[in-house]
Length: 197
Image (cartoon, rainbow, N blue to C red; front, side, top):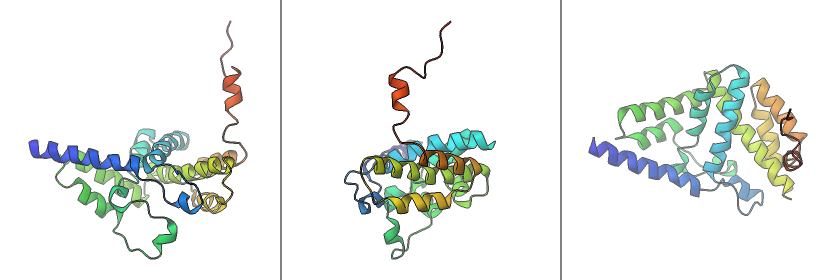
């Protein structure tokens, strides 16, 4: 058990790299300080839970799948799509197998099972998590556009094209029709507070 705990500690530190590594595709779009992989994964997990709840799937399972969907990028980094044509990479399941080697079996099983389910796309939860990944990219692109970056349309288009669930498509349409800070005045002005009495 001490060796497994040491290995588990190393794994947790490794996952911390996701907070440091930036989403490199945004550099191509001219975003000087893009979000981290962990930033992306957090909102993708929130979206996965929302989509799963509305699609009749398990929100908890979709959130779990989403949290581990980019965990391999601690070793692969975030290669922009521009590079993917020229770089051969290992399947995510194989990277994950290397990452979890030596971890306590219940933890290794949890992570490898989550990554495999996400990659295979056979469950509704996996489809919701995959849509959440694309929807998060779409939302981030809209936010960057609202901040003055005008070269992000390819990210919007590719994200829209990849959506599969009815709820994901509807939410994307609404996001495109809504400014990223349209919600703020209602909160500041107290319009979202429940009526008293």
